[in-house]
Length: 177
Image (cartoon, rainbow, N blue to C red):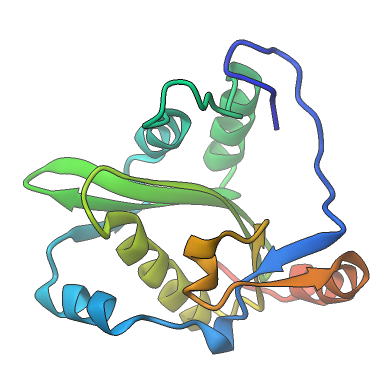
């Protein structure tokens, strides 16, 4: 992470309680199920990675700042070009209206950030991400932290030790995004 977009330094975060979404316990609310049935978005994968990264860096509250600086952008773009960082994009009328991105390593996906310019766009991207992870044999969806938003989908906090016990088997699981 970075303190701000202008700070060239980065630092590592290792929370004592780690956020994950158990793939077998992922929850979709009834209202989101209705949105999914309407299919208001065209969903794509890895077609607008840098646009998604930029969308995640922009905050609705200009006073909130961002943790994504140029060093972090460059790193994620390099990981994307190497096939280890992926995005899920939501489009409406040809415009990118939401998305998320993260890093994949073996059967582990490390969700980094998400954004939405239209109601439910990032939520729909998360649903498609989970479907894709399940279909491709992933074992772990790491959210690093939990938020009220992610808890609605089944995100839980687990002790760092339990997380570390899950991590190695997940990374060693062969999976392709």
